[in-house]
Image (cartoon, rainbow, N blue to C red):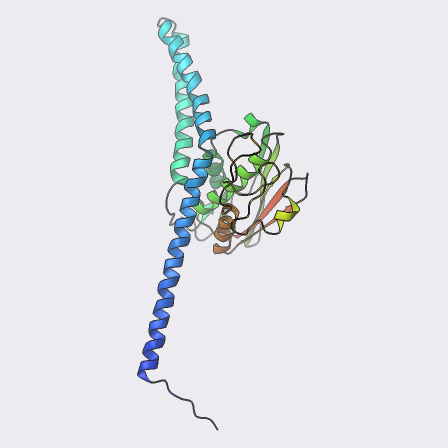
Length: 279
């Protein structure tokens, strides 16, 4: 019968030191992952900067025009009132976009639950420009539930998927649908588009790092393209969908994609309900 050997103090000290080293490496890995996620949010904002600037210009132009007309006719009280109304509406719209962008640029979010309709609304506001102005219908139909994920992280996922879908349809227009349902302890969310779809050669690897789809033929990374219509629009790092997958998985959920050439793409997300976590 064999005798169980008791490790000596030096061996125990070596094991403890090794465990501490692994814990330190794990903490460093978490820090790098958080930094990468934040960097990607900022890169996404940089990518959509031209869209946001164009939208601000659309907001400011009527405000300036009405203000000039009102100054030219100071006795026209109806025109003055119209100018003030236009200024207020434009300022409120610009403030809403700016607030969403500032929230999206935050480094971290300590909340652990997100109310689905509000978070999606914030994500859409981060994109600045109304998709209908580009011939794209946006249909949103989600339940008013709370999901167990940081609102900032869910915003990042939705911004990435919607921007990709809009980019894929920027030449032809189409429809983007964000739909969801709650069943038991899970929420099922879908983001779909009627674009050209993801090329088969890319589809199986779409969530891998550094994988990108052609600018004219797929829903790849949000960094893959700008608002340019050039077929040679720049490529990004191919990290957007990889980060989306990690954010969803870290919340205890899953994300999958289905696509056929010419029939658009559908991203299916599953997240736990968070009824007891919302503050």
